[in-house]
Amino acid sequence: MPELPEVETARSLIADQALHRRIVDVDDSDSYVVRPHPPGELRNALAGRSLIAAHRRGKTIWLETSGTGDPATPGGPELGIHLGMSGRIVVTGPDGSVAEGGDPPYRYSARPARAVWNRFTLTFADGGSLVLRDPRRLGRVRLNPDIGVLGPDAAQVTPAEFRALITRGTIAVKARLLDQSKIAGIGNLLADEILWQAKVSPLARVSTLSSAQVNRLYRALKSVLESASAEGGAHTGAIIAARHPGGTCPRDGAPMVHGVVGGRSTWWCSREQALRAGQR
Ligand SMILES: [Zn+2]
Image (tube, rainbow, N blue to C red; front, side, top):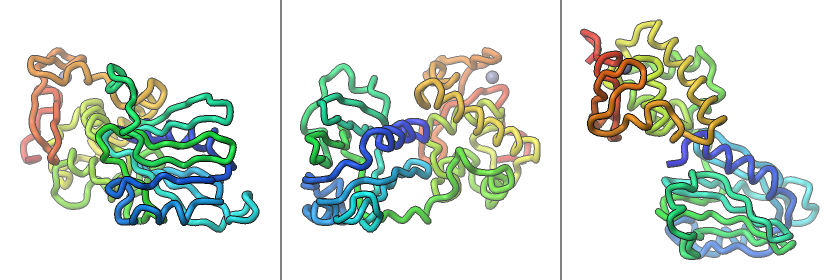
């Protein structure tokens, strides 16, 4: 699943290669991916405009569009894109060159890309295109997405914001890390990696976290995001190889434990991430 680092590769690809190209056609015929818009509504809203800026908060991308007259001036709606569980952005240049960003390609690389995976397409006047390619069809495209429902971006959140957002209430800390309305951008793999780096049990109630634990979580968040971004995504984390029955902690060799926390499959070190008394 694309988490913050993967979504950022898609955003930066769009910023580098898809801006200031006039949109002449829009294939928005997949009524599920464009819901609640009826097919044709995005085409009517976007044809004749250009993308002029690419933003991201958490796992949501939104693109500013120009007016239909001067392609350099704003005036169009914002185009929101969410990559869902398996979405990639494919940008084709005027010369036919193809570049991709988003969900790591390895998961589907055994099979050639199929045209049916192309869920939404902008065709540019220069002959190139921007495509949302999404095998599992859980991505989403919509006009004027409500970014205000998202918490601060995980890569931007300050220590004070993090402390306030992470410790309120009594939910398990893993579930809180996954709550996009509190901190945006952390998915299942990043959450497990952050908790392991910080040596905090995923089951610990947020109200019971010590100051030292919150500080370790914040430092782990920053370092995990940095290394995942540098190395190509959340799947490059240190405990990925240990996420299986019989897996052992890469730090101390203790058995890894599995459970479902916050509705997601979770792995943690039985020794270093043991639940402390009073934290359940
Ligand atoms: Zn360990």
